[in-house]
Length: 229
Image (cartoon, rainbow, N blue to C red; front, top):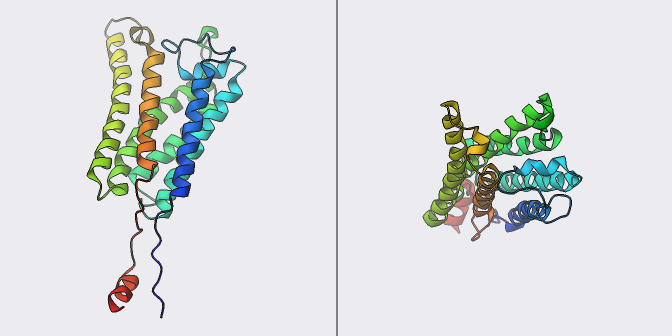
């Protein structure tokens, strides 16, 4: 009788996920130096401002690459039994991924010409995305790194940092509601949003980069056969 093989976590899908996410991030950085979008202020203008230019297709590809990488990365963790198929981490990841697709489907509104339904949907999706990514990473870290407290701590610190950047925006909104200047002017919104996005993506990469081969849970039958042998 042969002993059932215990499947180790293959790093291939996880590395592909990290490459996809990194590729999307690099395309966003590229938009800041291309002629059609180089004049967009990275300090005051949000990332979605790129979608209002002729380089919109690059922005769309970048966001979809991040969504694809996130999906295949968490999918690999679920498939290899490092995350339950239904858990807080998987739900928040699904919301993050779907929100990115919605952001592409409903571009940022040009508020200079007035509000729009699509612009409102875009704004809601942006908020959901920025909140759900660090939450997905936070909840996944314990399951993914059960015996690596250092990796777990680093990943969770990055997740908290990403949420902290969102807290800066919430603070500006509270101040604005209490008589302060408009919240989008009270802070360097573009810089804060970029810092929040970068920190969140680094946290995601920290979660997905395989530091070592981790074996999947072993069935009772496999354990019994191993003992018998």
